[in-house]
Image (cartoon, rainbow, N blue to C red; front, side, top):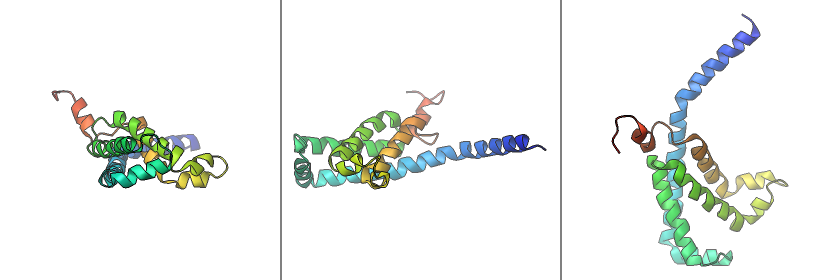
Length: 156
């Protein structure tokens, strides 16, 4: 057997394994980061005055309103990610919230994206943002309400 044929066989096998694992990986991402978003949002809502004070210290306009909006987006968005409902839609406002977090609370990390990438990558919003990008690009996977509702024969 030649090298090209061996490579093609290996690539085909790895593609099959990857396709098989994709739904489980997407489920794990949705469950872990959805729960993380929910907890972060709930923490903001249950400590709204402290959160609004922090937002005010970052010079975010209308700090209480923005705290409620960010926390509500994180709570509801997190729950929707967990069950896999409207996953791509909800990933957009969650990405927006994380970009605002970078631009305000982690401004130094954002400014260091090229000069010190480790600082950017280790900032709190990074993995939350990455999880949202993965769900936006890949979808929620087969183990989600989105997939269940799109199946033929399931009435909506």
